[in-house]
Image (cartoon, rainbow, N blue to C red; front, side):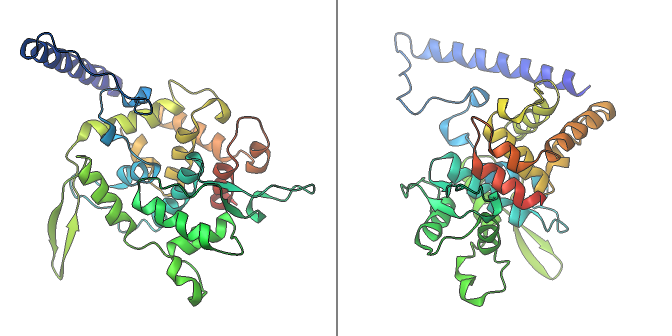
Length: 293
């Protein structure tokens, strides 16, 4: 039922895009579309979107956790805060800004190795740049586990409270508002008013959900090193943030059971062993180790 709905919605979207293309050609006869500049090509799963609709790992995890109509995450979810900080470390590593210090001859574990600044070039994202600035200026360096605690404010050291990144969910939601995914509203909860961010662009969220579902169903390869690193990180961090269940909720019972079985296979992997394989990202597995230890 779900796959039929997805196929039909895709057909409608293709017909809509085709009609829009035909209309544009009628209006602009003889004009050619400019080719994208180098560095602006879209990923295969973002085709049809503008550059502004590409989301960071933090935005994807938050979007999976937000209730569509209410526009806020579950009040009972106390995992998403640290999960979003893990997203930041992996995002910065995937963008070539962070790395783990060398493991040394005695091969120290992932959680005992320090996080080093590889490049301080701005990312264009305020939250990422703020985290990068903290990491660059901190001497001696801290471990992955320490940075997750420091950036989320879960530290007992009062001298390090200034590392905490505040209002992260609200700032991410505003980023998604600017990208046309969410909108901003005010809701009254008897004793107080709260700013909420209901979903406005359902296509983007459905495509995100479909991407996660396909990764563990139709496109499952049973090897995280043959999967896209960003997608692997999304699955791990969505689980650590307690929002992965939202992506699997629309599945049929047998699909849901199969998806969860394969997610458990990923969670049972040994991060230390996986980090030593070829074509890997050590920061990704260090963050996984921090949440699964």
